[in-house]
Length: 468
Length: 112
Image 1: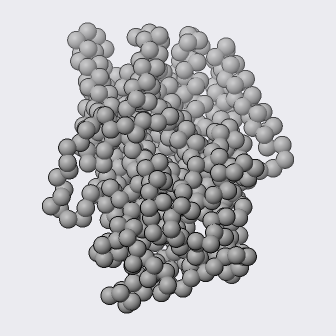
Image 2: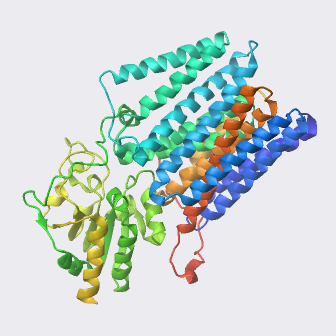
Image 3: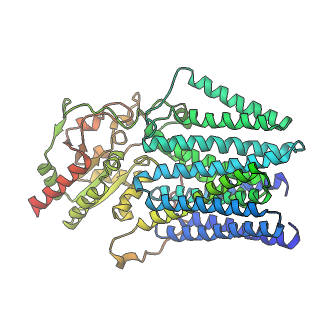
């Protein structure tokens, strides 16, 4: 690359990076977000075409190289297009994990390829970034694959730990870094192999002990890792486009990780050590039991809802697990048609990834202005006639306000401030924290024991028949 | 370009990223993460460059895998982000599709 040509390429990369930043900026409002995505796509196409131009200009690529490249792009694009078009919105966290895995994997491959061509005459500064690229990329790849497996239910969602797991992890980290140092000091492909293997195993052992409920944090963290790996790949091949884009993603993942950890009132370190979330099947203790808990029939609940002035719906992961988004939207529409003021209170960790519940409700045609964030909606509960809690548990537990419980200090939705509370729940089973929800014993609370989907359908039917 | 220049670009981009992303409302966090996902698909540029220098079997295999991974990342990411964003509507009635003036950039939501 020389002179003017190189300058033009660099300017195109700069324009592409600007498009990425502008695209992310336009996502600060749902009304402009789609345009943001299009701007980002335009930047990406420019960057890829510019890179193609470099390859043609240099003229070093072999015919086999072209075939391999185009075949790879063809296969990858096909797979990406197919999965993106067919994926269910409930499976979005898995898909994001898979994209994290392939992104991190590609970044690691760039580093591996670069290192294997360098030979013995390597500047230490170059190989440090190569090493970081390979390590972070490999950890992201295997960690994301495990995370996707857990989210899909292929791998148990329960935390998998064994005595001494932490020591094994530390040993793996030591091996990775030790051989990494060796790999820089005296370049060898064998050392590279050991580093890759140790990093891959480390990724697995890092994610395995983490429970299902902590997945929003893990996905965000792996997203940050992928971004960093891509930025490192940019250092390796001296490509500004990769560095800027990788840094943007790293920042995004970092912010989301922090937000999610805060919303669960847990430090990132605490989550990574794992063993907290007990998994999806929070032991369904049979039957409507428990002292001081009153249950309610569909008709009575329907009357309360139909004659309320203001209703706030509090959806949790249980709603998504039961695929009841459409049923809840149908009930809300019916109530709105009767003049009831309906909105939704969304806790930051209501789904399996940041903002997941919002997407699920948007899919059920719930207008986004009705989706209220925790800080925005909490003052409204005192003015609310009925709070309808569906599949949300720990995030509504007033015990979080007192010290000394498993969830103390966790930001919660102030559901107990509402004049009356209806909880749709299959049983008195515990949430992930494994403690009783004091909300259920509140005299203002009525429990409607039902599966979310069936329960909501019953409520809708009752509202229709009772108040027409 | 020197390592130091690369590093300066990296750190400044991190700051820009923090600034821009902390303004994204929680309701869009999933599409945001998916959009960020697509952006790291730019590693496809890296895959193209390693394909350009490949001349051995191992090199070709690495280039193929990298290109396939990165292409899946970039194409899938953008398509699914678009699919999600399409679902976010103010109201199902098209009449109100015209959104009221957006005070872009200044509408808070600043966190962290």
